[in-house]
Length: 421
Image 1 (cartoon, rainbow, N blue to C red):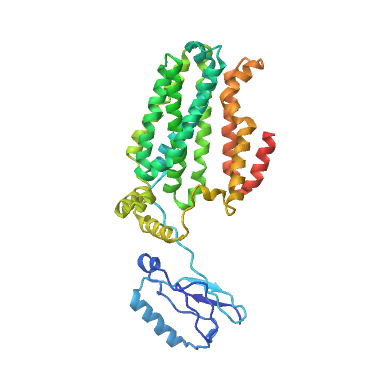
Image 2 (cartoon, rainbow, N blue to C red):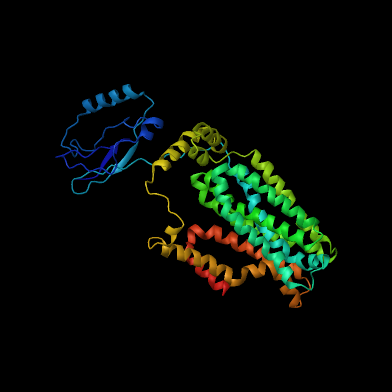
């Protein structure tokens, strides 16, 4: 049987004895509820007089059918034309492509607010790089490398605690409220570090700042992914890492005045208070994640949030996606012990090894001690050299983000690891 043209927005169930095969069943409840009536234009216009069912339609009967369909659903309903290639006497229905409604809302301002958490993550990691020598002299620990190590590492100890609690807080209180709570240790920690008169206060401030960046490391990518439209979710998902690198760069650049002003290190730590406060204020005016609201049974609030993020035109689409997502998987959630089962062990091992070897390659030593290393190597502009390292980090992240979908993940990893070697 040759090629034929079909005009249809519906699909047919297989009819016994006629050999009609279809890939799609009758419309789902979402088709019936939110889209043009799924049966509108449900007829076939054949190039030949006889169709695959052996049923003959004359022009008169086809005209009557068209008139009946229009009378039932209104004259504005138009059939959507697709082509179906017969194979072995069977017909395949081609499901119509999903129409993407243009959004009148914008998520970018709220993604920008969330990225303040990523900037603070990178800033607190890198701020100690140029400031360590000067704060050590000011606090009387210049000859005590152990206490200097505590100043550096206690941030990571706090971050470990924060990263384990961030997800639980976000599930219990919501994403925006968790951001506002997170601003408390971030602000207090930065203030204590900036005003510390003893090593004990400095360490407490670093621990609190670490807890704050640990929480933000969990909720920043979560919030961004949940409010991002599907068509740009992958792109926005990479901005978290990019803004972490920007935060590191900002901390290294902030150390440039240290050579002329040894007490500038206090200003470097104190600057972090500003984005912490802005994060809390911004999140007070940001919409909650529609997905979290839906999971809490607050459907009307989820619709309001979706309207702010995407515009009223896409509210129905977003709610349908949330409905489908809630019914999409019947598998129970995996627990921590399941990660070590034979089913998940291989993929968990590969993922953990990637992170482990990346850290063991020495990037943390560069972030924390590059200024000291450059100084020991005889480079006069040691802080400027560290800032250049931070700039290269931002550049590499930008390149990887732009090539990730085109070049592939594995090839970029191989190139990256080769460069690290």
